[in-house]
Length: 456
Ligand SMILES: Nc1ncnc2c1ncn2[C@@H]1O[C@H](COP(=O)(O)OP(=O)(O)OP(=O)(O)O)[C@@H](O)[C@H]1O
Ligand SMILES: [Mg+2]
Image (cartoon, rainbow, N blue to C red; front, side, top):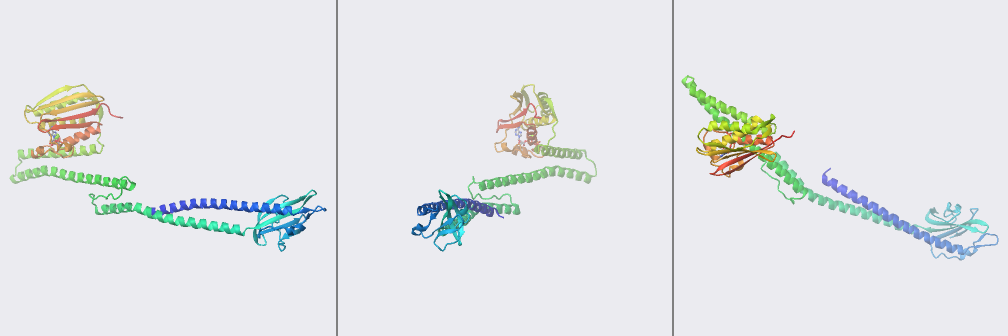
């Protein structure tokens, strides 16, 4: 059953139930009031009739005066019964059947609803008591036809109104629910189309207020689509980048092999070139594997307490040896700090950052390194006086395969553009953070924060 039908039924049933309850209450109350009114008429009539009854010398009620009694109402019947169940008087005379056979024997005033001569009656039975004891019963009855008709009319009106309002409200509810749910149906339809067409660039138009439930659903779905589209684009670009990086070394290797085959001699230069390219490929594959692990948070970390200052000094010396006299490397401050981390990975981060600084800073430049403690973190700051990173590159440098314009045009055989993304993910996996600030033409500063301890 559809949601709109279920909601409509629920609404109509609830309304119907409520109306039924209130209707029954009204009906019961009105009936009570009506019967009460009938009873008070009966009480008055019986009191009046009793006044016309006299106890004679034999201790009997004298019914002779009764014939003069005028009830003033055509639907009143009354009877006088002796204790021997003998009918002494009846008005009208033809009414020989007892009005209320049970009430005759009770010995006190009772009101009962009965059927006598096939007529629905309300009857009061009043015991007739003389000083010598009970001698009989007076019964006064009133025809309930009018009351019954009133009750029937009331019931019909109540049922009719309840049904009418139920049908009306179900109809209105259906229209309203239908209108409210139409955007949902549209959204579902478009979502299905998107899935079928495999077109993640499409979005569901927001045809309802953004803050409504359906509006929020549509927005959530759209942002899921954006995220998916983003992921697919990244994935596609990644495959393209990897293929591109793989192709160059493979072309070089094939070329060198071709040369050797042609000249039928093993050339040392070619072998060196092949070895270099194979090393490069190995490095690329290793880096990619590391990145894949780090990005999915599955990088195995060999956590130990390490002296960060010692590690930094080691890296510093390594880079200094490589850079030679090209640039000046300087330590501006180094605190003794131990952190809990994976030594090799931390070393890799520092080597990437310091390596970049040494690599991109032109001859005669200065690279400074500083290690300090801030609150419960260790901070490494690496600054250079190099060319800086253009503002439009800055947001992207931590992305895989991203290389600045200048580094790219520097030609093949240089980096892959993976160093910073690897550094970023290693630091992230250690619960730290990495920041960069750069001014074009003036230099770049990277700052890395490592927590001192690792959560268990
Ligand atoms: N200290 C720096 N000064 C100027 N530009 C920098 C500096 N560090 C990084 N960059 C820019 O950021 C880009 C990305 O750096 P990243 O280390 O990720 O890649 P790479 O050095 O080109 O290659 P790889 O590190 O994989 O060998 C670089 O290509 C360069 O343009
Ligand atoms: Mg690098």
